[in-house]
Length: 246
Image 1: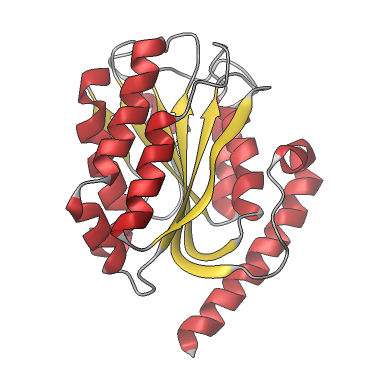
Image 2: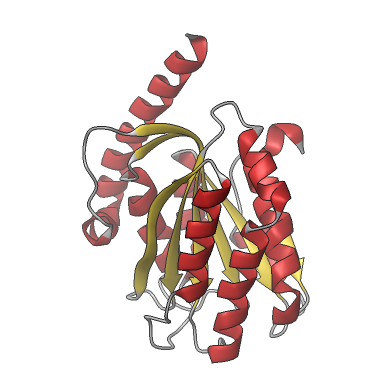
């Protein structure tokens, strides 16, 4: 009963956050977010929004290393074991491609994961998705604003909401990322980072200062795109388990 009450309380807080986001100028992000049914929201341990960098610095091969790496990481048995070890034994995952401040697109809608068949379906969708966005700038702030709408309108009630930002570059469009980060953190959204150091060797320090935030936030480092699969596996496992056990 206490757990159910806590979830309901958090949900009311999330609804208040929606109103605050709209008042703070996030209305465009909510308009762009996919529509969901107002009723029938399923409780899950985690709502995890994964992002795929489609900026100028990401070529076709590097895009595929992101999608293939994420799919292969999800298929590892430790991922399912971590999901089934949670209180509710299920999580929800969605995927967004992003580049500049005007280009973000959901490529995998919210999917509830609780079994091996669920994981395989999700992994196949991630692995086989085309690149929908043309190359553009790197607007992490644009991604954050869009993610706020996607998470707020998710068809689930989540114990934790996490935005997973993978990138090889620094924000160069859309304003100051730490300002938007702080707003999302106030609404209970945790932002984690996976930095690919092929362009900026100290990108992880930039993420630690300006990008990540919220309860249990962290950065995982991939030295290059070939290292992405190992890095995203470590990141997914840590996000699914949750900060209380890591």
